Length: 265
Image 1 (cartoon, one colour):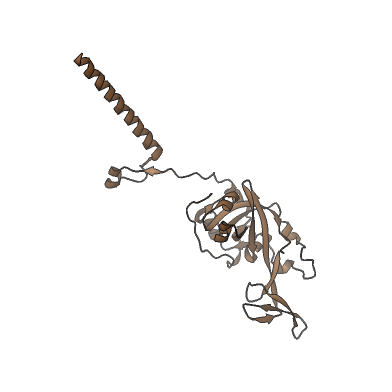
Image 2 (cartoon, helix red, strand yellow):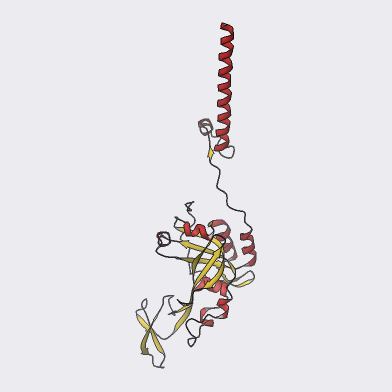
């Protein structure tokens, strides 16, 4: 079970502006911030480690999208002024357009917008998990807005081709692990950032396996003299050196006793 250091938290999740960066039309944030978040700021975990994690925080991983859950839909209708879901009503406006109720506005609207809500089944060699992508992060890899793809006359289970094209695609994800994930109350991990930039994906995939840091142990003399840091000796080596010293002392003691015995004789 992963219980490592606590990564950077409290980054905005779905409020980043869409910008035109690198080779991708749909990119979230800036190229610099994207790279930093995937290669510098957050702990890198496999999907298996994410599932086993006992740490609340933000992590990055590389996985392949296998499927999109269509039973719970791929989009939702939201208020034009908020990203919250609106509920249909039986009322219509003056132009005979259906009205939808927004709890945040506490009023009815006829102008509503379709937004992404993708539940993607993602896997790697260590396991699989469901990643939840909201509007901005879904657009980053679909490269279309939900409004462009949504047709109110289509069956709710219908998946647009631009979305099904994600099947088999390798994507870098920055995800959140929250208390509900750890307690087993939620099997979905919210995606805070996603990119399928080929260069970044390949660079991330080529990163060497993580290694546990060697425990360093300084002597009291080192600490008092201030000569600690990069010259400290690993604990395992220190123990080996101490064992060697102990053996030499024991051998010296035995030789001394034998010498004294010969003199007495």
